[in-house]
Amino acid sequence: MKNIIIFGAPGSGKGTYSAELVSKYGLGHISTGDVLRGEIKAGSELGKIAKGYIDNGQLIPDALMIDILAATYDKCSGCQGVIFDGFPRTIAQAEALKAMLTERGHDMGVMIELVVPEDVLMARLLNRAVEQGRADDNEETIKKRFEVYNNQTAPLSAWFEKEGIRRVFRWEEHPSKDEMVKAICDSLDA
Ligand code: ATP
Ligand code: MG
Image 1 (cartoon, rainbow, N blue to C red):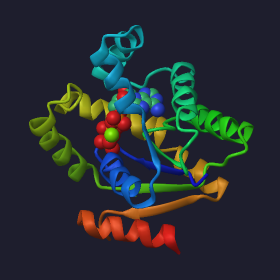
Image 2 (cartoon, protein in one colour):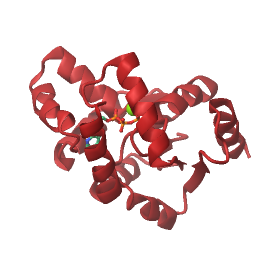
Image 3 (tube, rainbow, N blue to C red):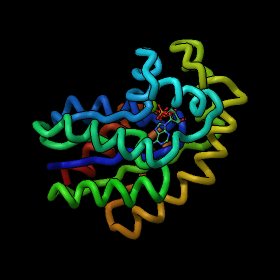
Image 4 (cartoon, rainbow, N blue to C red):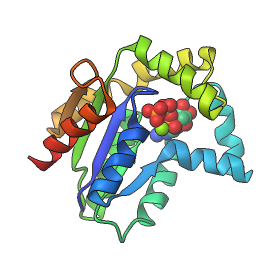
């Protein structure tokens, strides 16, 4: 198993770079945001619960999220490895991910952190709002998501650093998509 965790603020490009890595390395892709939006679209019980949190820019409670993640991961058992996109978002989720993988004889692999200034993120998300019409891509909810990210998710960066698997990529150094993809792939191939 060659797992990759892709980490960064809302709009940092987790989904965009995941797609590139999936096609280059033949990995499975677990986007927890996509899983939740699928549940909302299907009108499931889980979707109804998730919608309340997502529309407010809040995180879905850890216990629920951890169950969803484990069930989704076990569906990828035939994969060479998986990209975790949007998970973990809290220290509790990170601890649970590590435990879940250890139980299965797997490991977290590499963590890729995308660092992008907040004004660039805001511009991208407002642009995505026009293109994709996601309910949580409006200025007020985006600001809440940034706050939640800074308070609950950003501290995970140091957690991954302690695990010794964190690699940081800064938008300032790789401002185009192609440059960023190249930098990430060079690092993974080295
Ligand atoms: P990006 O633009 O980089 O792809 P994003 O932060 O805009 O990322 P998603 O990852 O799609 O968006 O997540 C959308 C919402 O789904 C979050 O704001 C949150 O409410 C919920 N969510 C997704 N993953 C998790 C998680 N691991 N824990 C709790 N809530 C989650
Ligand atoms: Mg996403």
